Image (cartoon, rainbow over all chains, first blue to last red; front, side, top):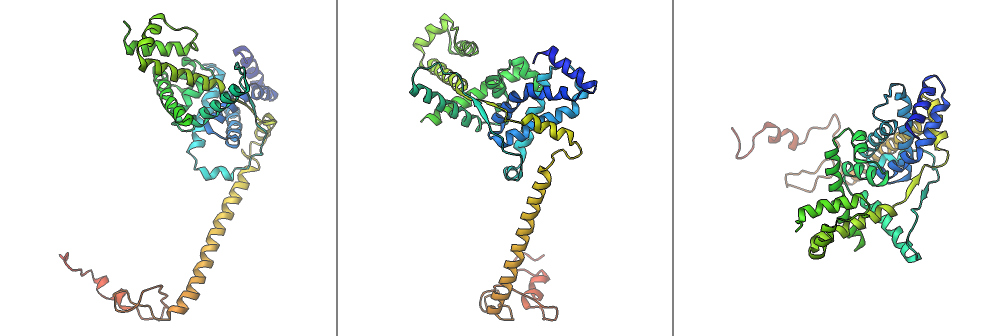
Length: 187
Length: 157
């Protein structure tokens, strides 16, 4: 969703068109869910958290200012929501009763020719998911925003409210840790 | 000749471009420096891992669930919070009940075996298993004796 479209939806929403928000949810739900999925590491918490993100956004949408961008604002809510979820004690997730939705993943297009290579690629994808769950939330946030969500350094800085230099340094540390963890998984 | 510290910066730059552009000086440096070559291999592996990682799509009907929650603003988590509270309350009641029952069992069985008077713990006889003092029972010596007067060997003021 580009900036103009987002602002059109917001304008309609502010004029009392509640369905406009539904369109906003549809437009952003995959990216927000994907972020929550990588931040929290499981489907159930990710869905609960993603729902919370949109409910929080709805409640504070009337106060939204165009800077930073709508996506950055939504990402910021998502990151804070996921950090709150991680702080909760693990047993609480067993007391959550959100309906089990079916989860779909988009397999990255394999440029590798053989089934063996395809299997290797899948194993590598699993290894990076497991490695991500081992690093600190602070480092995981920046690396997921950069490598999974594809945000630029400047966008990440806007989402997290930190300097570009800090983003770069955290990404560098995250890469170092992930390289080490990947090696461990591949042994 | 490129130094390793400059090489690391160029490797990071190359990583940003998805390794499409590798500086020619870096290329020469990598031929002779195994440490930097290993750094490059590690970053390439990491890049491949991120490219292989799945991208998840939101579950079906998530939009509907979000909108339903929004329309029920009075209860921000319709259906889920009352259930979770109920489960937590049930767990608490169950734990307390189990505690009371096991306490009653121990009191009735173990005390029946131990007899009405508590064994002493001062070494003069037996092992103290439990003490059930009634209101009319005289307090045993280990409660009324020196223990409460504060007289201890070696550290009196």
